[in-house]
Image (cartoon, rainbow, N blue to C red):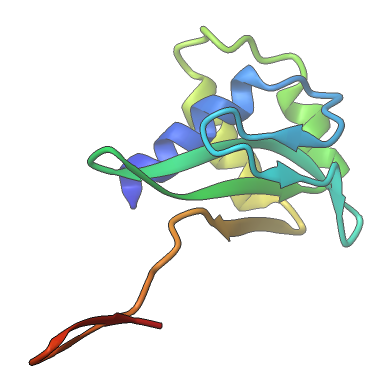
Length: 115
């Protein structure tokens, strides 16, 4: 999970600060540009081996967005600045959207039945 959040933070820095609705390129899942008055910072994907399990979008308030707008994505202190901004934010939300679909399979003595 920590790796997924780190990947999301990097994706947030790489995303445009004036992001409109974003589509996670890895999963093709769409995230709206606003959620309950919070702005979308960026999206990332959680992988387990070759499986793309879910996409996550990070939403936060205008003050956090403004404090991050001057940070370059290759800035060595960017991760620390992002963490500090999110901790001090009035509101930050992470929205998970599942990509991996589970199929229930029951095995019977006479064969396999799929629900």
